[in-house]
Length: 425
Image 1 (spheres, one colour):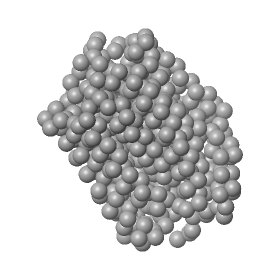
Image 2 (image 1 turned 120 degrees about the horizontal axis):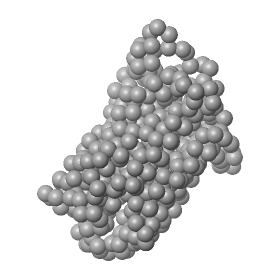
Image 3 (image 1 turned 45 degrees about the vertical axis):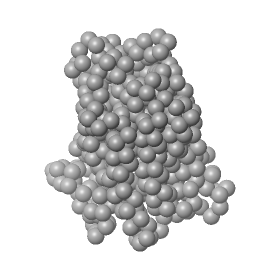
Image 4 (image 1 turned 90 degrees about the vertical axis):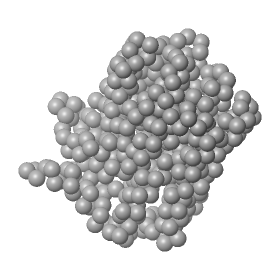
């Protein structure tokens, strides 16, 4: 099994941020993060301010299950040539462009209709945004892995996370500010217009070399769908199942608690402006510190050591939200919870991207990476759908304690791989 290349000094490790492909990931990260937070969190705040029940908001989060099932259509993104668009953009960028267009259209429809007009129709528009956003993720992930060597993937991941977190400020704090001072409808129209950043990036960046990808031929089902799974098993053998299990349980804690975070803030009496200031401006700034540090640590030390610490920190920081729920409208504790959660999220997000990238074979980039990222979010999103019902029946403190306990399997499995010094590349 080949060794993952690392840099010999901190100076050489920092040089990863000068690469053009790494810089491009900053803008692709923004394009991916904008719709994700709208689907996963900001819309929850809109629904709660309109008086929608927490149980309904929890079920609403199931619209984001498309992120968990994107491996189903990832083989199409890997191999299907889109008419006209393929000749203009190439294999990867054509799918990214098409997905970005539908994300923008879906957000516009959400803005025009709103939840008060027809909640079921509004849910359909959220689903459109979610599906298109998940498809964009498949294309961007494939572009990232194929556009840079393995030793730059930590930097690519960090740049992606920077852009992603900037988008979280915009679609989180920015959307809340605009909703507070204008309206939710206007806020979402502006969010839709900002997808132009992703579209411009798609026009500018170079198409990666995908000449090594074999044509599907007459055995397209085997080549596009079955072969990526066989390849993964053949490369990891006895570790394959445990690697998939680790991916599946790693984000149970933070995804489960995430759906109820905004409803908690609102129910504790924090204003939309206060939530925006603390959770999305200050909090995301802290996240970027974690992102930058993670990119360098990965380049210097690999992934499993930081992955273990991330698993532990995720459970511990979730407990801070249980304390916040107990002590109520306490701004200092609110800030502490946000600092801990966002710093952990910044490091964890970057480490996970690099880890999942190391598991892929470039012959099946989109399909395998989509499988990993789908598995990363699907169990958590399924559980998150019941989060509102748990809060309504048991209240916030017990819910967040339960969410923290969901992180224990990830801690144990990561420790197992670290002890065996397993190299997944």
